[in-house]
Image (cartoon, rainbow, N blue to C red):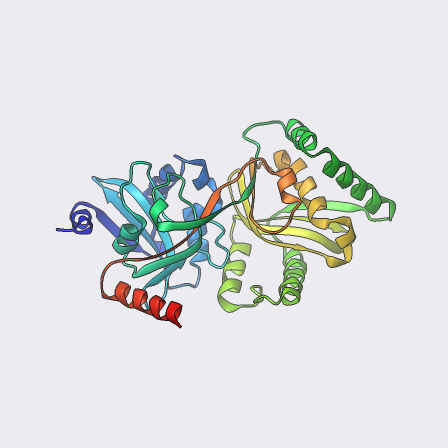
Length: 338
């Protein structure tokens, strides 16, 4: 008997659509997440899996129990060939199984137990270093974590760390005011007006950079619309008159906000609109009831001046066991050869 066979005989595995989760399932899932801060992102929540599964019949969540105790939760999309992708893709800054610290399953075993032929991700989170042999690369996301610290003390610590940068930020604030722009910061559920302006700016950004426009691609737009209409859809935005200067839009869970659509009005580029928004969002975190503001990664250089924490993210491309997994490995080998 193989190791996987032993696990199959001992463990109880349920694979279902996220909308089929019970309150007990959600409670056990959250108990697993509570064991490590890296799982605190709203993107690891049952509610996000349910929202991202809206109108997606290929969404699944695997719940693996050992002796009646949940030891692993794994949410994913599955393609017809059995290849799994992160739930919420392409807006999946963090992905992978949520496991207990003592879970002995490898990533490949979790994939197999979940009924997948393989799983591929650019955003694996592995807080217990359980999948070291199955991951590659590595980068650090950027996160604001107040952890109860007074916002004035937090900002002073950031200013002390980057005095020249914050002096320049104050200069830009003064410049935009002198040139007649009265700024208004807004937050809360995304309104149709906000989404109209934000997605138009983001679409313009995608086209200018030659990337796929995720604001109109069918499956990605489905997720955007689902989150916009969800009780936990959330936005922060900066306006002058009726013009949107910059905005963040994403998913909120309790005291944590994880935006994954960020857009800035190029007409205000010389004011550094991303910085103007983030400064006001940070100052308003107590008012918004937030302790965590997750900026993930990206090329926006100003993010690092406001953040104090991060999450390690890796790449993973594993195949499971069985005929379909063998076909996936064979296809990948042929592609590399070609």
